[in-house]
Amino acid sequence: MDTKAPFIDSLSLPAIAAPMFLISGPQLVISCCKQGIVGTFPALNQRTSEGFEEWLIEIKEALEKFEQETGRKPAPFGVNLIVHPTNPRLEADLKLCIKHSVPLIITSLGAVSKVVDAVHSYGGLVFHDIIKKRHAQKAAEAGVDGLILVAAGAGGHAGTLNPMTLVAEVRKFFKKTLILSGCISTGRDIASALQMGADLAYMGTRFINTTESKAPEDYKKMIIESGASDIVYTAAISGVHANFLAASLQAAGIRQEDLTKDHKVDFGKELDTEAKAWKTIWSAGQGVATIEDVLPVEELVALLRKEFLEALEDQTKILKKYS
Ligand SMILES: Cc1cc2nc3c(=O)[nH]c(=O)nc-3n(C[C@H](O)[C@H](O)[C@H](O)COP(=O)(O)O)c2cc1C
Image (cartoon, rainbow, N blue to C red; front, side):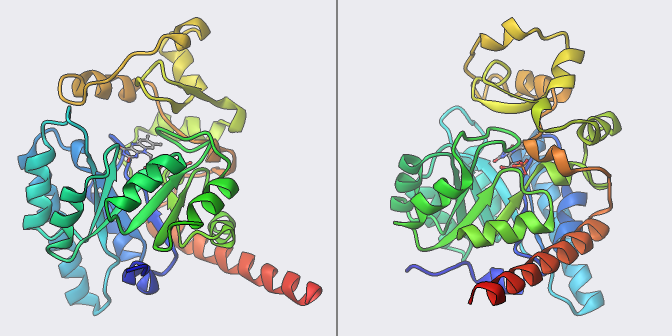
Protein backbone atom coordinates (compact mmCIF):
# COMPACT_ATOMS: atom_id res chain seq x y z
CA MET A 1 0.00 0.00 0.00
CA ASP A 2 1.32 3.43 -0.94
CA THR A 3 0.11 5.20 2.19
CA LYS A 4 1.77 7.88 4.30
CA ALA A 5 2.58 7.27 7.97
CA PRO A 6 -0.72 7.97 9.82
CA PHE A 7 1.02 9.72 12.73
CA ILE A 8 2.08 12.64 10.49
CA ASP A 9 -1.35 14.26 10.87
CA SER A 10 -1.12 14.32 14.65
CA LEU A 11 2.25 16.11 14.91
CA SER A 12 2.56 19.76 15.98
CA LEU A 13 5.22 20.16 13.29
CA PRO A 14 6.22 17.77 10.45
CA ALA A 15 9.55 16.95 12.06
CA ILE A 16 11.60 14.15 13.56
CA ALA A 17 14.47 14.82 15.97
CA ALA A 18 16.98 12.43 14.37
CA PRO A 19 18.84 9.72 16.29
CA MET A 20 22.39 10.76 17.19
CA PHE A 21 25.18 8.61 18.56
CA LEU A 22 26.16 9.70 22.11
CA ILE A 23 23.74 12.67 21.91
CA SER A 24 20.16 11.43 22.13
CA GLY A 25 18.76 9.78 25.26
CA PRO A 26 15.45 9.54 27.10
CA GLN A 27 15.39 13.21 28.19
CA LEU A 28 15.60 14.50 24.62
CA VAL A 29 13.18 11.89 23.27
CA ILE A 30 10.57 12.50 25.98
CA SER A 31 10.73 16.30 25.56
CA CYS A 32 10.34 16.05 21.77
CA CYS A 33 7.35 13.70 21.97
CA LYS A 34 5.67 15.92 24.58
CA GLN A 35 6.05 18.87 22.20
CA GLY A 36 4.43 16.92 19.35
CA ILE A 37 7.43 15.99 17.23
CA VAL A 38 8.95 12.51 16.89
CA GLY A 39 11.84 11.86 19.30
CA THR A 40 14.36 9.12 18.48
CA PHE A 41 17.60 7.59 19.75
CA PRO A 42 20.08 4.90 18.60
CA ALA A 43 19.79 1.63 20.58
CA LEU A 44 23.60 1.63 20.76
CA ASN A 45 23.56 4.79 22.91
CA GLN A 46 23.15 2.34 25.76
CA ARG A 47 26.13 0.02 26.18
CA THR A 48 24.02 -3.10 26.74
CA SER A 49 20.62 -4.44 25.67
CA GLU A 50 19.60 -4.40 29.36
CA GLY A 51 20.35 -0.69 29.54
CA PHE A 52 18.51 -0.17 26.26
CA GLU A 53 15.39 -1.81 27.72
CA GLU A 54 15.61 0.46 30.79
CA TRP A 55 15.50 3.47 28.46
CA LEU A 56 12.52 2.05 26.56
CA ILE A 57 10.62 1.60 29.83
CA GLU A 58 11.60 5.09 31.05
CA ILE A 59 10.37 6.70 27.81
CA LYS A 60 7.12 4.74 27.66
CA GLU A 61 6.28 5.45 31.32
CA ALA A 62 7.01 9.17 31.00
CA LEU A 63 4.85 9.48 27.88
CA GLU A 64 1.99 7.50 29.40
CA LYS A 65 2.10 9.73 32.47
CA PHE A 66 2.10 12.83 30.27
CA GLU A 67 -0.99 11.61 28.43
CA GLN A 68 -2.81 10.78 31.67
CA GLU A 69 -2.00 14.16 33.20
CA THR A 70 -2.66 16.39 30.19
CA GLY A 71 -5.13 14.40 28.12
CA ARG A 72 -2.86 15.16 25.16
CA LYS A 73 -1.37 12.38 23.03
CA PRO A 74 2.40 12.68 22.71
CA ALA A 75 4.07 12.12 19.34
CA PRO A 76 5.42 8.59 18.75
CA PHE A 77 9.05 7.80 19.53
CA GLY A 78 11.57 5.86 17.47
CA VAL A 79 14.66 3.70 17.85
CA ASN A 80 17.56 3.50 15.42
CA LEU A 81 18.94 0.00 14.79
CA ILE A 82 22.14 -0.70 12.85
CA VAL A 83 21.22 -3.61 10.58
CA HIS A 84 24.65 -4.99 9.82
CA PRO A 85 26.24 -8.42 10.42
CA THR A 86 28.87 -6.81 12.66
CA ASN A 87 26.24 -5.47 15.10
CA PRO A 88 26.03 -8.30 17.67
CA ARG A 89 23.12 -6.63 19.47
CA LEU A 90 20.72 -6.48 16.53
CA GLU A 91 18.69 -9.57 17.38
CA ALA A 92 18.40 -8.84 21.11
CA ASP A 93 17.59 -5.15 20.55
CA LEU A 94 14.99 -5.95 17.89
CA LYS A 95 13.33 -8.42 20.28
CA LEU A 96 13.07 -5.64 22.89
CA CYS A 97 11.56 -3.27 20.32
CA ILE A 98 8.93 -5.92 19.56
CA LYS A 99 8.34 -6.59 23.28
CA HIS A 100 7.77 -2.88 23.93
CA SER A 101 5.97 -2.18 20.62
CA VAL A 102 8.32 0.68 19.67
CA PRO A 103 6.17 2.76 17.28
CA LEU A 104 8.96 3.65 14.82
CA ILE A 105 12.11 1.74 13.91
CA ILE A 106 14.77 3.56 11.92
CA THR A 107 17.11 1.14 10.20
CA SER A 108 20.60 2.08 9.03
CA LEU A 109 22.88 0.23 6.61
CA GLY A 110 20.68 -2.83 5.92
CA ALA A 111 17.05 -2.77 4.80
CA VAL A 112 15.91 -6.30 5.47
CA SER A 113 12.38 -7.64 4.91
CA LYS A 114 12.74 -9.90 7.97
CA VAL A 115 13.15 -6.83 10.21
CA VAL A 116 10.33 -5.01 8.40
CA ASP A 117 7.97 -7.99 8.83
CA ALA A 118 8.86 -8.31 12.52
CA VAL A 119 8.06 -4.62 13.13
CA HIS A 120 4.85 -4.76 11.07
CA SER A 121 3.71 -7.76 13.13
CA TYR A 122 2.96 -5.48 16.12
CA GLY A 123 1.85 -2.47 14.06
CA GLY A 124 5.16 -0.56 14.09
CA LEU A 125 6.59 1.36 11.15
CA VAL A 126 10.05 1.14 9.59
CA PHE A 127 11.87 4.10 8.09
CA HIS A 128 15.21 3.42 6.44
CA ASP A 129 17.95 5.97 5.76
CA ILE A 130 19.72 6.13 2.41
CA ILE A 131 22.14 8.42 0.60
CA LYS A 132 21.54 7.19 -2.96
CA LYS A 133 18.81 5.90 -5.29
CA ARG A 134 20.09 2.31 -5.45
CA HIS A 135 19.84 1.91 -1.67
CA ALA A 136 16.37 3.52 -1.75
CA GLN A 137 15.19 0.98 -4.34
CA LYS A 138 16.48 -1.94 -2.28
CA ALA A 139 14.78 -0.61 0.86
CA ALA A 140 11.52 -0.05 -1.05
CA GLU A 141 11.67 -3.69 -2.19
CA ALA A 142 12.16 -4.78 1.44
CA GLY A 143 8.81 -3.09 2.22
CA VAL A 144 9.87 -0.15 4.40
CA ASP A 145 7.20 2.44 5.25
CA GLY A 146 9.41 5.47 4.82
CA LEU A 147 12.71 6.52 3.31
CA ILE A 148 14.98 9.02 5.02
CA LEU A 149 16.98 10.79 2.32
CA VAL A 150 20.27 11.93 3.81
CA ALA A 151 21.50 14.73 1.57
CA ALA A 152 24.81 16.60 1.35
CA GLY A 153 25.89 18.60 4.38
CA ALA A 154 24.03 16.48 6.95
CA GLY A 155 25.50 15.73 10.37
CA GLY A 156 26.79 12.19 10.92
CA HIS A 157 27.23 9.89 7.91
CA ALA A 158 26.05 12.36 5.30
CA GLY A 159 25.43 11.85 1.61
CA THR A 160 26.77 13.91 -1.25
CA LEU A 161 23.64 14.58 -3.28
CA ASN A 162 21.70 17.79 -3.52
CA PRO A 163 18.42 17.46 -1.59
CA MET A 164 16.24 18.67 -4.48
CA THR A 165 17.64 16.00 -6.79
CA LEU A 166 17.51 13.27 -4.17
CA VAL A 167 13.86 13.93 -3.28
CA ALA A 168 12.77 14.21 -6.92
CA GLU A 169 14.66 11.08 -7.94
CA VAL A 170 13.27 8.89 -5.13
CA ARG A 171 9.75 10.36 -5.36
CA LYS A 172 9.47 8.96 -8.89
CA PHE A 173 9.20 5.41 -7.59
CA PHE A 174 8.42 5.74 -3.85
CA LYS A 175 4.97 7.02 -2.92
CA LYS A 176 5.07 6.30 0.82
CA THR A 177 6.54 8.62 3.48
CA LEU A 178 9.62 10.60 2.39
CA ILE A 179 11.72 12.22 5.07
CA LEU A 180 14.42 14.72 4.15
CA SER A 181 17.63 14.93 6.16
CA GLY A 182 20.51 17.39 5.98
CA CYS A 183 20.97 20.99 7.17
CA ILE A 184 17.37 21.48 8.30
CA SER A 185 17.82 23.84 11.23
CA THR A 186 14.93 26.34 11.06
CA GLY A 187 11.17 26.34 10.59
CA ARG A 188 11.71 27.84 7.14
CA ASP A 189 13.96 24.87 6.30
CA ILE A 190 11.15 22.51 7.34
CA ALA A 191 8.76 24.36 5.01
CA SER A 192 11.37 24.07 2.23
CA ALA A 193 11.64 20.31 2.75
CA LEU A 194 7.88 20.02 2.28
CA GLN A 195 8.05 22.26 -0.80
CA MET A 196 10.59 19.91 -2.32
CA GLY A 197 8.18 17.01 -1.91
CA ALA A 198 9.17 15.51 1.44
CA ASP A 199 6.51 14.63 4.04
CA LEU A 200 8.71 15.15 7.08
CA ALA A 201 11.91 16.94 8.04
CA TYR A 202 14.68 15.04 9.88
CA MET A 203 16.72 17.30 12.15
CA GLY A 204 19.94 16.29 13.85
CA THR A 205 22.46 19.07 14.45
CA ARG A 206 19.83 21.62 15.56
CA PHE A 207 18.86 19.24 18.41
CA ILE A 208 22.45 18.87 19.65
CA ASN A 209 22.01 22.46 20.84
CA THR A 210 19.14 21.76 23.20
CA THR A 211 19.26 21.66 26.97
CA GLU A 212 18.15 18.01 26.90
CA SER A 213 20.89 16.70 24.55
CA LYS A 214 23.78 14.74 26.06
CA ALA A 215 26.41 16.83 24.23
CA PRO A 216 28.99 18.58 26.43
CA GLU A 217 28.74 22.37 26.67
CA ASP A 218 31.93 22.92 24.63
CA TYR A 219 30.42 20.93 21.75
CA LYS A 220 27.33 23.16 21.78
CA LYS A 221 29.52 26.27 21.93
CA MET A 222 31.57 25.06 18.96
CA ILE A 223 28.36 24.61 16.94
CA ILE A 224 27.36 28.20 17.69
CA GLU A 225 30.81 29.46 16.69
CA SER A 226 31.04 27.39 13.47
CA GLY A 227 29.87 28.22 9.95
CA ALA A 228 29.15 25.93 7.00
CA SER A 229 32.76 26.03 5.81
CA ASP A 230 33.95 24.80 9.23
CA ILE A 231 32.47 21.36 8.51
CA VAL A 232 34.89 18.69 7.24
CA TYR A 233 33.62 15.68 5.25
CA THR A 234 35.96 12.73 5.79
CA ALA A 235 36.01 8.91 6.04
CA ALA A 236 39.18 8.96 8.15
CA ILE A 237 37.46 9.00 11.54
CA SER A 238 34.71 6.49 11.06
CA GLY A 239 35.48 4.41 7.94
CA VAL A 240 32.38 5.93 6.35
CA HIS A 241 32.23 9.53 5.17
CA ALA A 242 30.82 11.78 7.86
CA ASN A 243 30.79 15.49 8.69
CA PHE A 244 32.82 16.81 11.61
CA LEU A 245 33.52 20.18 13.22
CA ALA A 246 36.92 21.37 12.01
CA ALA A 247 37.75 22.92 15.39
CA SER A 248 37.28 19.54 17.12
CA LEU A 249 39.62 17.86 14.59
CA GLN A 250 42.20 20.55 15.31
CA ALA A 251 41.77 20.19 19.06
CA ALA A 252 42.37 16.43 18.73
CA GLY A 253 45.63 17.14 16.85
CA ILE A 254 44.37 15.68 13.57
CA ARG A 255 46.16 17.13 10.57
CA GLN A 256 44.91 17.49 7.00
CA GLU A 257 47.08 14.57 5.84
CA ASP A 258 45.55 12.25 8.48
CA LEU A 259 42.16 12.76 6.87
CA THR A 260 43.08 10.76 3.78
CA LYS A 261 43.49 7.49 5.70
CA ASP A 262 40.31 5.36 5.52
CA HIS A 263 39.60 2.53 7.89
CA LYS A 264 36.64 0.22 8.22
CA VAL A 265 34.58 0.01 11.38
CA ASP A 266 33.33 -3.26 12.82
CA PHE A 267 30.28 -2.38 14.94
CA GLY A 268 30.89 -5.37 17.22
CA LYS A 269 34.60 -5.09 17.95
CA GLU A 270 35.04 -1.39 17.47
CA LEU A 271 32.05 0.21 19.12
CA ASP A 272 34.21 1.38 22.02
CA THR A 273 36.87 2.75 19.65
CA GLU A 274 34.15 4.44 17.62
CA ALA A 275 32.63 5.90 20.77
CA LYS A 276 36.02 7.27 21.82
CA ALA A 277 36.47 8.90 18.42
CA TRP A 278 32.99 10.48 18.40
CA LYS A 279 33.47 11.64 21.99
CA THR A 280 36.37 13.87 21.08
CA ILE A 281 35.84 14.51 17.39
CA TRP A 282 32.44 16.06 17.15
CA SER A 283 30.06 15.54 14.28
CA ALA A 284 27.74 18.25 12.99
CA GLY A 285 26.20 19.24 9.68
CA GLN A 286 26.51 22.41 7.62
CA GLY A 287 23.28 23.53 9.29
CA VAL A 288 25.49 24.91 12.10
CA ALA A 289 25.47 28.10 10.01
CA THR A 290 22.08 29.14 11.40
CA ILE A 291 22.39 27.81 14.96
CA GLU A 292 23.09 30.57 17.46
CA ASP A 293 21.77 29.30 20.76
CA VAL A 294 21.04 26.38 23.07
CA LEU A 295 17.33 26.08 23.86
CA PRO A 296 15.11 23.77 25.86
CA VAL A 297 13.17 21.55 23.40
CA GLU A 298 9.90 23.25 24.39
CA GLU A 299 11.23 26.66 23.29
CA LEU A 300 12.92 25.28 20.20
CA VAL A 301 9.77 23.58 18.91
CA ALA A 302 7.72 26.75 19.58
CA LEU A 303 10.29 28.78 17.60
CA LEU A 304 10.40 26.25 14.75
CA ARG A 305 6.60 26.29 14.56
CA LYS A 306 6.55 30.10 14.40
CA GLU A 307 9.19 30.17 11.64
CA PHE A 308 7.43 27.34 9.78
CA LEU A 309 4.08 29.15 9.76
CA GLU A 310 5.71 32.44 8.71
CA ALA A 311 7.40 30.66 5.81
CA LEU A 312 4.09 29.16 4.71
CA GLU A 313 2.47 32.60 4.85
CA ASP A 314 5.22 33.92 2.62
CA GLN A 315 4.47 31.06 0.24
CA THR A 316 0.82 32.17 0.10
CA LYS A 317 1.96 35.67 -0.86
CA ILE A 318 4.09 34.21 -3.65
CA LEU A 319 1.14 32.09 -4.77
CA LYS A 320 -1.09 35.17 -4.95
CA LYS A 321 1.54 37.08 -6.90
CA TYR A 322 1.91 34.45 -9.59
CA SER A 323 -1.61 33.04 -9.89
C1 LIG B 1 26.56 13.69 16.31
C2 LIG B 1 25.71 12.92 15.36
C3 LIG B 1 25.54 11.57 15.56
C4 LIG B 1 24.72 10.83 14.69
N1 LIG B 1 24.52 9.50 14.94
C5 LIG B 1 23.64 8.80 14.18
C6 LIG B 1 23.32 7.45 14.51
O1 LIG B 1 23.79 6.87 15.49
N2 LIG B 1 22.43 6.80 13.72
C7 LIG B 1 21.85 7.40 12.63
O2 LIG B 1 21.04 6.77 11.94
N3 LIG B 1 22.15 8.68 12.30
C8 LIG B 1 23.01 9.38 13.06
N4 LIG B 1 23.27 10.70 12.74
C9 LIG B 1 22.61 11.32 11.61
C10 LIG B 1 21.29 11.95 12.01
O3 LIG B 1 20.36 10.95 12.39
C11 LIG B 1 20.67 12.80 10.85
O4 LIG B 1 20.59 12.06 9.67
C12 LIG B 1 21.48 14.07 10.59
O5 LIG B 1 21.96 14.63 11.77
C13 LIG B 1 20.64 15.09 9.85
O6 LIG B 1 21.43 16.15 9.39
P1 LIG B 1 21.63 17.53 10.21
O7 LIG B 1 22.53 17.17 11.33
O8 LIG B 1 22.26 18.41 9.21
O9 LIG B 1 20.28 17.97 10.69
C14 LIG B 1 24.10 11.46 13.58
C15 LIG B 1 24.29 12.83 13.40
C16 LIG B 1 25.06 13.56 14.27
C17 LIG B 1 25.22 15.03 14.07
